[in-house]
Image (cartoon, rainbow, N blue to C red; front, side, top):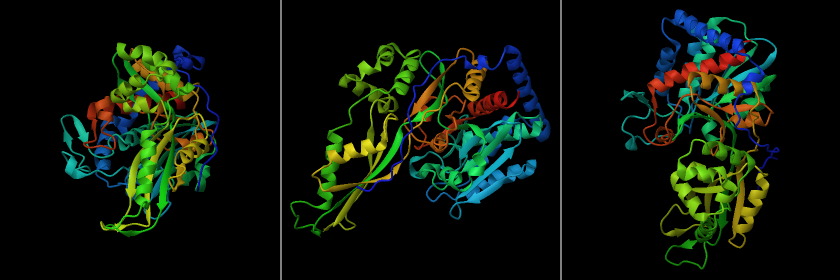
Length: 484
């Protein structure tokens, strides 16, 4: 077994409490920050002649039409687009390519001596098969109150919210209590090794004295009983594996007792027939208990006691139908995503392989998971190789940024609630949690579940009114952090 696994950090329990901002601010502080927001919007409009949220939408429509599909990426195109906007504003910036064409950009607004805040976005998007879309995936078409196109939700929309916030702060010229850094990186959709990970290794100066980071991951969601804002504070840990089998090749008309292909099929059959046992970790248990407050009667009791509920196979089966995402938080999982045997129908190949996208709960080292999976496949003649494995870490909920999210969403969306969120997908935030930087996945835009499911799927689109409101909400959150 060949392996490239990193040691994992200890995991602490999440909190779902509100009200921590009051430890830092009194009502006068909150009122003053609201006035700052109004001033920021006014200054932005004077500078450009239009509201910042309208500007951001125009940028987004143009941005969607820039092809940064990964592979191959070509994120330098996005860097050039963002750079033109910065140059028009007179904002200095720096760029660097990892391989040619894989561009990254960063810029800094200088402030006081508080630890800096990073707004992180990735500029690449996943492929889209046009024959399954109702519009060209890179058209930026406006229809039915939506902007359509690959990347509208993941994550060019959030990226333009970050840009609008950054430019509004620049235009205002009001002293900041900390540096604000905008980073636009490549390659997130393929692991970030040519983007955020590359920047950490080759330009560590960007992240010196950084104390907070905001990225993609969480959002607003209207649930059965309330509007819930979910802030991503940790993730299931990706462990990507390749299974390889070598056996005697030959003619398809004369099969041997075993082959490379049958060995791979046997291994995959074992994994499919033996799903990993369910277990509940503290961070996810806390999240389910928070979700119980807004759950339908059917799920209120199970969510309140998931340690017991996961012992019922029938309930887990219903949960998977109800929400594959929530079901995935109850166990380690592996999805079979790639397979290759012969390149000719009548040839039994000497080698066959399959690849697995495994995601493990953030409570133990990935080496343990890989060892257990390898033991399951003993006797099949299949070798297990680790393609990629990240570390696990949880961001705390007692920071000024998390508190600002709570306070601003509560003020601007009365009756809403904020809860920490555990993601089944991974983002570039893990690079910065590894550095000890509290990192949060959050865009305050409210996205219905049916729309969110279009991410990486067909007909991805963004509600224009929700996007524009999200731009202002995001600006208000950052203003609450960077102004005294």
